[in-house]
Image 1 (cartoon, rainbow, N blue to C red):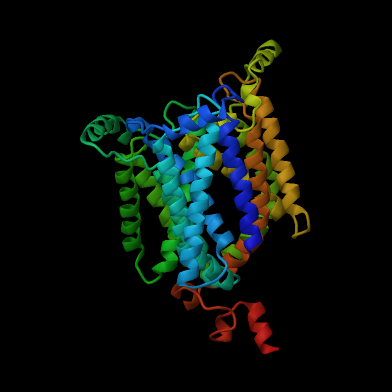
Image 2: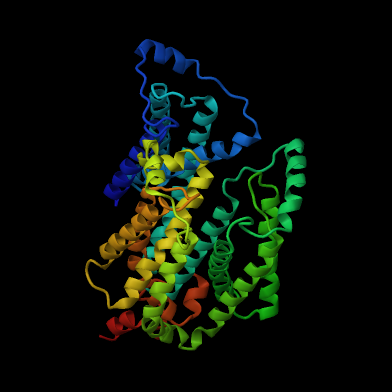
Length: 463
């Protein structure tokens, strides 16, 4: 396991170095500087009095180093116990701070990169948060591996999803921290509260975004229904409304938040649908769902393709000329890997990544439904999603007012691969009956009554 931590820490560190140096407003802009001059500048690194408009970028720099702290602590965690744990944490924070300082020093050779004490502090705090999150989360990950294949695993997954959903809603955590910020925010938020998501965009895109937003809230209701199976549907409906109202209320105090009152209604409806689905688990509707989806694939596949084309603005009759398409590529910066993610805020880049993963997840989902599991299905889905995303981006070259980023095919391939990997296990978890094991937090396989265990464990005990 430690080798995996070292591998992922190395890969993520390379990505951080690349995004911190090579990718810039003008692309690769290396300017040689005398080492003594660079060191003098580095020692004089200033503390910038940034405004609230820079708070999101500061938080994003903090979050960027959280995985480094987590992975390095896992790589250095040699023994269990308080003293070895403290030693591992101390060594991890020293390595993280050294890494941060090295990257900041190298950035001096890549103007106009900003090197300031603000971002050094942010990334140091992020590294420390990653170390703390390792000690808080890694034991739960080990526990999840123990209960894998039992109903308790479904609760672990749903709880992790709920935490990730809340975090995504509150990105980039740039809360109003002063009275002037609050005044400006309250004046702006009046127009947002009564609006609709994605206002000003084509109606098809708006409907798809609302539908995806509703689907994203269904697992929250499913989790609530499993956790409170004895509560009435009206009580759980009130809890759902309170949860969604709280999210909108908190987003009012986010400088870049987009609180919509109408989202309380349709997300609450989606949670109620999830609650109802959790109540119907004793019915074999989940077992019947897979064959129905398999039979519907000839309809679902073209419908999915048309939806993706429509969302990306490719269902149109007016197109760019070939000369206009060639003119787009006079500026080759867009061909630099992930440059389009750099020129926007880190929160926008994260949302773009999540949106593209969701957009191409159905590729892997439909491939996993098409036939039984076979070796290489995950890579097959990754290749299909990658090619499909490339074709979509190529089509956007001919569509007016459409930005093109061929590197969006990378998260598309990742989405296809993940879907095929996750769906078989997820189907098995959904088809398991809910017992007291799932509600109480889980009992490792082999404990408790054999009637309450999955068939494979029950058969092993009987033998």
